[in-house]
Amino acid sequence: MKAAVLFETKSPLQIEDVDVAKPRAHEVLIRTLACGVCRSDLHFVDGAYPHPLPAIPGHEAAGVVEAVGDEVRTVKPGDHVVTCLSAFCGHCEFCITGRMYLCVSGETRRSSRDEPRLRLASGGSVQQMLNLSAYAEMMLVHEHACVSIDRDMPLDRAALIGCAVTTGAGAVFNTTDVSPGETVCVVGCGGIGLAAVNAAKIAGAAKIIALDPVPEKRAVAEKLGATHSFDPMSDTAVAEVVELTKGGVHHAIEAVGRPQSAATTVGVLRRGGTATILGMMPLSEKVGLSAMDLLSGKRLQGGIMGYNRFPVDIPRLVDFYMRGQLDLDTIIADRLPLSQINRAFDELRKGDTTRSVIVFDQ
Image (cartoon, rainbow, N blue to C red; front, side, top):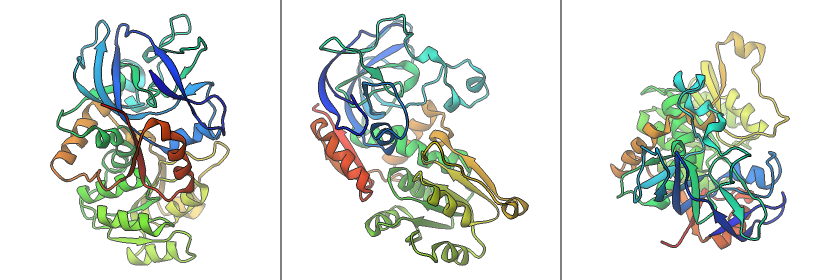
């Protein structure tokens, strides 16, 4: 199969021939049909986050099951599936206490003693990234890294649910538990932020404020449900949000991954408000609350992958789309073949686009 391989950070990915192993027990072979271009992958490509190389990035994907190994019970050949990097074992402390998104069990991967799932056709080794490696024509994953969905769901839009929507909407539905009538501010209007805006509308938030320096992205946010939008680079942006909401918002969601964005997220909170940080910040950075923030009852939390229970959440999000409540069509800015993966990353670096999707021949 063809796959986009990262051999060296800060260098273009190369399209290579890669061999994929046959599925073993609890493994699923998937023909990839679409994969979103996510900033999380870009962090690894640009070297901000470490990973053994060479490796195949890509984690926000959808496709069709080609074959399954022994003991697979959740999907079957022909099923349409969405993958999720929150692969879970099902029986560790995190899984049995309902926090599957925190599972890091090695049981969802092959051990170093086993034949690798992926290998360069030239004979060299290649690492599977985030349990998926979806910038490839085929994926070989643990059955707890994918979920079957409605076959009527368009797979280029379904792919976005695997990360951006699961994270952004999950921040609203799971991590912050927005109640009808509350106010929400979303900092950053990329794929994750826009999904959070759309989910806040579904949740019945009274005011939904979108902050992004790009006017076109603010316009998309308003189309998806934002009642107001501001440029966060303005010196008065935080004050405007606080004034508009008569003291600050109940929930602020950061979807960029920059210290300045995190500070803005905390700054727009009202007394007792909660800031949720979704973006992957540089590993050396810290985010905090002042003594006065703590005395005001403000809270700060992470929101890894929207605290998802993806085997349940993803089919529900698909249903939201099929019923016209979740607008994924507006989020997609471009569809590109795998050969254009480096162009897609270049556009992502500029920060002007919402979400690009790599589409494969069907």
